Length: 80
Image 1 (spheres, rainbow, N blue to C red):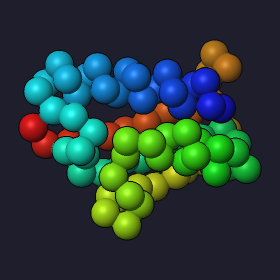
Image 2 (image 1 turned 60 degrees about the horizontal axis):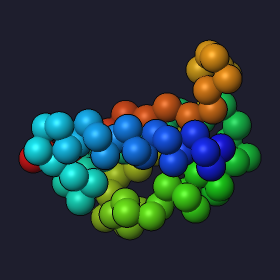
Image 3 (image 1 turned 180 degrees about the vertical axis):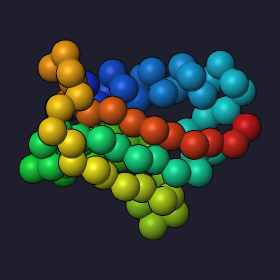
Image 4 (image 1 turned 30 degrees about the vertical axis):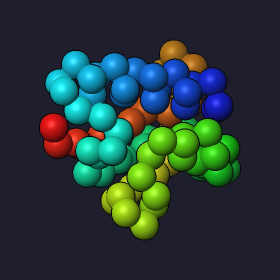
């Protein structure tokens, strides 16, 4: 989970930079996770650089399968 979360956040940073934004401009984040038992691990490595939970609407949704050994996917909304 940690490796995929870090990779996902790296991609998020690249997308945000491409549109002239950054993580500080996130308005909401929705995570889709195949194993809700590892959500604390995801939060531990994903929390770095994200606004605190109390300041950012965040949701985690458990799903049965994301395909191709994917454990986590993310939808993020940000302003620029």
